[in-house]
Each structure stands twice: as structure tokens, then as C-alpha cells.
Length: 170
Figure (cartoon, rainbow, N blue to C red):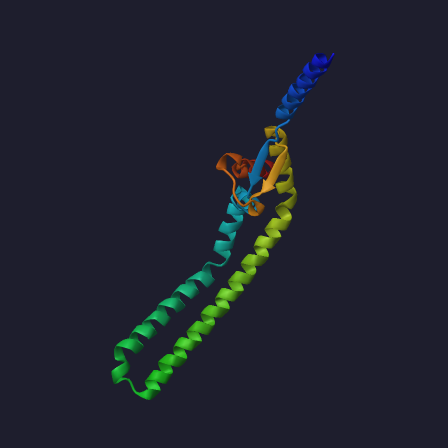
């Protein structure tokens, strides 16, 4: 009788471990920001933003060139310049730096605003894309890459999510 109980107990353990192995989680890791900003919609937005701020970019490049020339001139001719010339170059350089700062702040603010609006508008598509990839891949756990200390690239489903975002956006 004890022998039968032991055999049944071992058989039960074998069956339980088999069932546990059959229920191994399928894990995926997704970088949400990368999935979203690698999408076709994000690429189109970036092209639109570059076009919109092209004049500011060109103005910033001109100011940088002028500023660099002023610095080079000040260093090269410092020994032969009068105090008023030095003050003038210093004043011009400061003015150009202020203009560069204003352009940079304006562009950065607009860029952050546009990116946040894009994220807000794409949130539903991102959720639907993740859900579709989960269903297609049979994933039981999907983790945000930003919260995982380490993961092997075999678990990375970011590309699949980006492809699904592109598909859903069309």
C-alpha cells in the first residue's frame, strides 16, 4: 500500500512539473519610445519639423560662423586692437550668443511640444500595436525596456511593435 502511494506521489509530481513546464511564460521586451519614434508617422513628423525650422537652423549656422570668426579675429589681433575694438568685438560676440540661445530655446520648446503632441496622438495606436504583437506572438509577459536592468536581444519585440504601428497607421 505504501509503495502504491509513493508511486502515485511521484507520478503526480511528474505530471505537475510537466504542466508547469508547459506553462512557461513567453516574454517580450519593448522600448516604447524607440518603437514609436522609429515609425513612419514619426519620420514624417521629423521631416515636417526640419522643414518648418530650416530658417532657424540656417540662422543659427550663420551666427555660429560669425561668432567663430569674431573669436578668431580677437585672438589673432588682440595685441594690435584698441580697447574700444576689443569691447566692440566682445559686445558683438555676446549679442550673437544671446541670439543663438533664443533660437535654441525656441526650437527646443517647439520640438518638445510637437513630440509630446505626437506621443499623445499615437498612444492608442501604440497600445493597439503592442496588443496585436502580444496576440500574434503568444506573449504572456511584455516588459518596458526602460524598467529592465538587462535583457537578451532575443526578447526584444520593439521592431515588431514599430512594424505594427506602421501597419495600423495606414
